[in-house]
Length: 235
Image 1 (tube, rainbow, N blue to C red):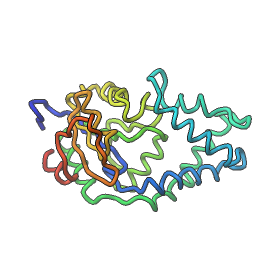
Image 2: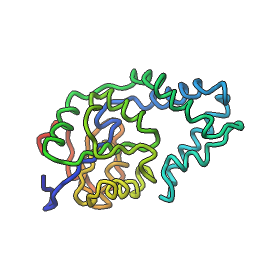
Image 3: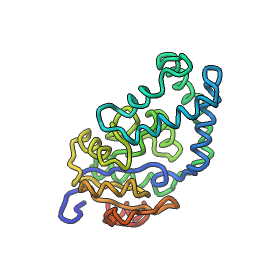
Image 4: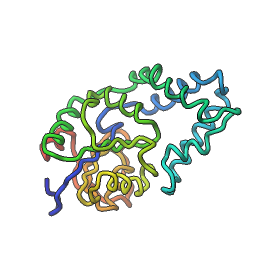
């Protein structure tokens, strides 16, 4: 695919609201409650939840010197005397035993799988460019919810893989460096302003409108607007 004279070599897909439908107003509080309940024998919810939310907020200011995972851990631990080594196995167990319960807030998009499949068939590098606040297991489970878990993605932006988060342009630079493709040769597909800002680096953009779509006047107009089925035809 050539857009404005530039060959597209990689497709970067946002996940929530783009490849799967998800009610974030229920998903996020549900996630926080499930996790805080799971570790309450170590840390009370009253202390755990504010610490968790502030640690997540700090990722928005990550300057690239460390991965999001490292920034999170440096602020979050120790908590109530427990170190990372004490609690991290408990967190990982949570993703195995409890995280699946949040599937009730998600719904697959029938057009997502055929679109992603065609991207692979046509030789593009395919990246899951989701907000990198969670470990890879949480993202892979959400991909499974959308019937998208069996593809061999070039990169999944879990919190250990990148050193920034959307809408920081460093996040998109991280992706380009990891997949060894210039931003100008990437197409970012998403439903929010924080996806479309990739255009400021030279990425081409495709807006899949959702209830979360609210573009800033400072964000360049997307190269395309449409559905995932429309994107499939372009590919």
